[in-house]
Amino acid sequence: MTRVVLLDLLVERPAFGQGGNAEIMVHFAPAECLLLTPQLDNRESYLSEWESNGVTYRRIDVPESIIDLEPDAVICSGSKANVSNWEPWMDDAARVLQQAVSANIPVLGICFGHQLLCKALGGEVERSSKRTDSVSPLFSVGMDTLLSPTRKGLFTHQDHVTRLPPGARRIISAKHCENAGMRIAGKPVWGVQFHPEASRAVIDQAHADGDMDDAEFEAFEPEHDGGKLLAAFAKLCMP
Image 1 (cartoon, rainbow, N blue to C red):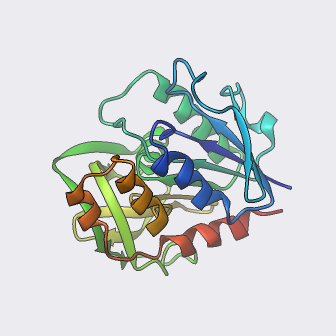
Image 2 (image 1 turned 180 degrees about the vertical axis):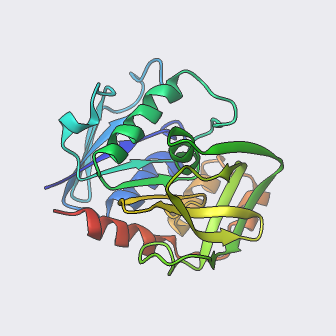
């Protein structure tokens, strides 16, 4: 069975958190998902273990070595926090990503996860003067079987990766975001600034929950094709 370690950094938002995790993990099923939540001082209010659609979710402490968990993939989600405003818990999250990259474990960083991955590997992240909430066209500026086919991405962010880490190649850009998608050369490691897991079901639920205002809901009305990226990533990770 496939084992995925997921840095679950949006757990406090039901639709984008647990709903987004489900959109990611459905492509790995049957699978075991180990959830790491270093941002939480107290996680007692969150379910520690459950099962859905062939995926078992278990919340665990951040290990000293990610290698000990023997994961087939490591994924880092988005977050309400900002890499440009570093918090102590981000040290543990960055260490997990560094260990996975060093061990050649497939890694996917999403939005905040993309920024954290780049920062952890020696890149730079800066805060823009304005926030972006949109579904935007993506333009291939490099060749990659995973990222190049993606044509539209759902963006909601203000931090940007302004310098890629050593060994990284820019694969896709958007009009407002130069480093919208990157890969570490020679490694199964990718980062995307957009949210491929933000399906129509996730968006609708977030709006219904009151976790998304009407302006955001309208901005996210156009379709995007992030689901294909998630399916392709899962396929290359499964043993």
